Image (tube, rainbow over all chains, first blue to last red; front, side, top):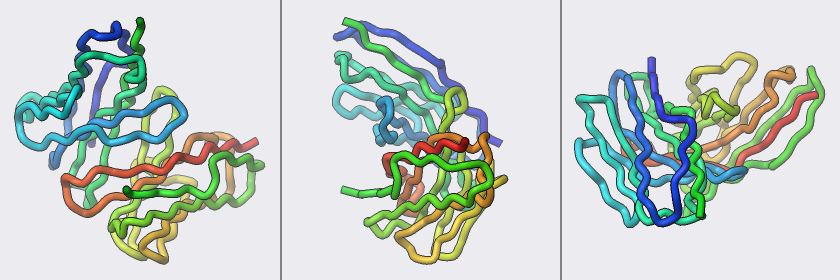
Length: 112
Length: 113
């Protein structure tokens, strides 16, 4: 089975840096995705990691350590519009098609 | 841009009714998925399909069925709606590559009374 853990809520200040952690246990690992979901909207894709290391994309970076079953999403220069839920999802190839298993999400609140 | 369209944004149905949720994608994606999203439980996979007429059960298939007669369309069917099926339902599609992200529709908020 899949087990994905991430903090339920976080608060950070506008302009600051925040790190959202995700730990996972899975068989047949085929990559880890981060999604952003604003309240009442659909999740949107942020990043994908399949190899160890850091992937940078503008203000957002994502890190993966496969040996530790660990990833984080780093948000720099926080803006008020970054207030959203951030979903960690693991792709497992052990169940046939390439479905994603999601964590419960981290609700980030950015305060002035 | 990929577009995934769900037929209804809000739906209210009575217990015991048969409910159809429709989803259409316009990017020729092989894979299509139905998730439900509930507070504290996150996104849970109901069913997915990796080809026309093919379907696989996800984590919580009980009480649901699906139909994929055409590549672009994936329907979720609640055979006899119950109050515990009140939820946000999200459809998604993706290419078959491992690194292909899911593209989600805007969701259908279903209330069963």
